[in-house]
Structure formats: C-alpha cells, structure tokens
Image (cartoon, rainbow, N blue to C red; front, top):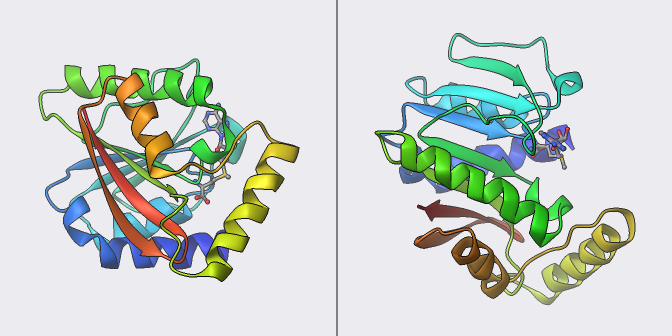
Length: 186
Ligand SMILES: C[S@@+](CC[C@H](N)C(=O)[O-])C[C@H]1O[C@@H](n2cnc3c(N)ncnc32)[C@H](O)[C@@H]1O
C-alpha cells in the first residue's frame, strides 16, 4: 500500500493545492506509518502534521513538522487541528462507526477557534472516469463487504453521512482514478 499511497498523496497535494493552503495543522487519522503525512509535510512546510493511528503503527521516520501520536479514533480524543484527514480509512467501516467518529470530529472542529474541516480521501462511487474504473470499484466493494464491515460509498451516501453527523456542506475534488478528496465543513 505504501507506494500506491505515496503516488496518490503526491497527486492529491498537486491537484488539490488550495485545500491545504492556509492550514497550520493537520492530523492524518489512521495515517499508518506516515507516508501521506510526510508528503504533505514536505509539500507544505508551514503545516504541522500529526499521524494519529493505533500505537503499533507508529513509524520512526520524522521531519521537523511531522510527529506521531498513538491512539484509537473511536475511544481517544483525536488531537485538535485545522484539518482532520481520513485517507482510505472510512471505507473499512460501516456507517454507524463512521458517524461516531465524524460526530466527534465536528465537535472538536467547532470548539477550535480556527474553524476547520474534515478531509476525506476515498472512493466516490459514480465518479469513475471509465467502465474499467467502475469494475474495479465493484470488486473492491465486494472485497470490503467480505473481509471488513465497510463499503464504498456514492456521493449520495457520503452526503447522508455528513448531514447525519451534523456537517453543513462538502466539496468533492477528483484526484486520481477512482479516488477523490472530499472537504467537509461543520
Ligand atoms: C487501510 S489503512 C489506511 C492507511 C493510510 N491512511 C493510507 O492511506 O495508506 C487503515 C488505517 O487505519 C488504522 N486504524 C484502524 N483502526 C483504527 C482506530 N480505531 N484508530 C486509529 N487508527 C485506526 C489502521 O492501523 C491503518 O493504519
């Protein structure tokens, strides 16, 4: 996953530069060993990036504007930041679990004086650019249902999740292949 994650993250910071401009802090929730956070930290030295993942995932690699915090997004407080990024994380979880974590995020963003947003890098079904893309999405969706409790979501399903969690608006920007960046505002 590391190489794919690196390539996608490079495309995301290039295609969605405006989404990162003006941020001073970002937490990559479920950021694993920090591949994505490292790409963001290098591209935007003024953003302090924190990888928040289960303690066993922490990496030794670091940068002056990158650190690691161990924790569980369902039971621990996610560190406060201008942006809370979930890249390829929510697709592993059913709606109830996503709702729980998104509600916590919204509460944290509303109590921060800088406002802020949730950023979700994930598939948006129906936004595929080709039939081949649609077939790959279908296969991944079946696999997620078989081995995890998660699923791929359409824009309508994402939108319902955001409004059920109390968010007011969102913007979807296609990044690469089947994947987009969704910015969600409290
Ligand atoms: C599919 S991987 C995605 C990793 C990374 N975001 C990427 O794009 O390559 C899901 C990540 O979520 C993390 N994770 C799973 N359950 C978690 C929890 N309860 N709290 C925090 N992180 C969790 C896993 O450790 C794993 O690193």
